[in-house]
Image (cartoon, rainbow, N blue to C red; front, side, top):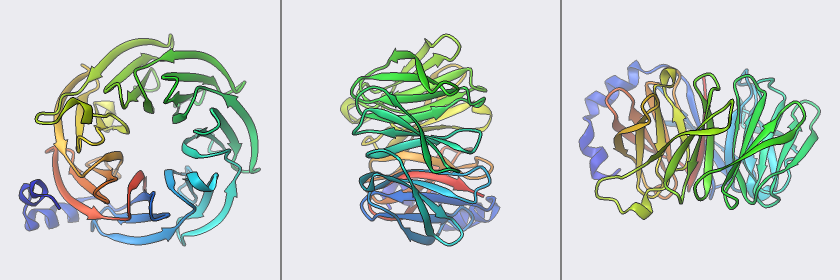
Length: 323
């Protein structure tokens, strides 16, 4: 734990805060260990570690949380695990180098970004068959789907675009330019907005979903950190989409963005090389994956303070919540 985290909270406060938090689990993929770590959101301890395929990255759950899907990038597979036992049930045909994915609201269709193939693969999780393979830009990574399920988004890191997919026809209907190396996408405000982070561009861009036009663009300036190290990657929205929390990579901070005014309100110091994050059940706490320091930082959302860092595997990357 770094000196900031040591000084930010007392042991007594930590224990009190932990007992008040709702129960649940944060699942974290560890790229270098080929494993997932399971953190109890009440005790803030790692309670399980399960083996996966090679270089696990993206992770998400089925709607009823009975299955967990894991992008085993170097195994060229999406693995389906029983979260109660940690047993791999089967693999899905994912295409090469699956990095991120998103599950459609129908709980059946998985949209997968295949970085090496410049395609988005759509897989039916029930039949375990490929439904479509959609040509997108070079090095696709970010994936999102609108709340109504009508639109899927793929971001391509080298082409610097967000690709808009009609999920009925499985065809592109729009392409929008973003800044250099887009990494993550999310829909917000009941699907009326779509946000994209650009790692090398150092920005977060907001689009109007109906017109695919740009509404706003945010940049970040972390005090005392060189601009080259401020690299937006994963982000999540807090309660009621009031704030967005943005991982800023090797700056070792997350930004707090007012999602109504598009202004950056705060920066929170976390671990080294922060990638992604997940909330607990009531979104009172945020858990960030810190690749280089090999840990997860627990952030109190109300006070915007780091509470604790939890050691997991080597190079933690993705995160997902399970009640």
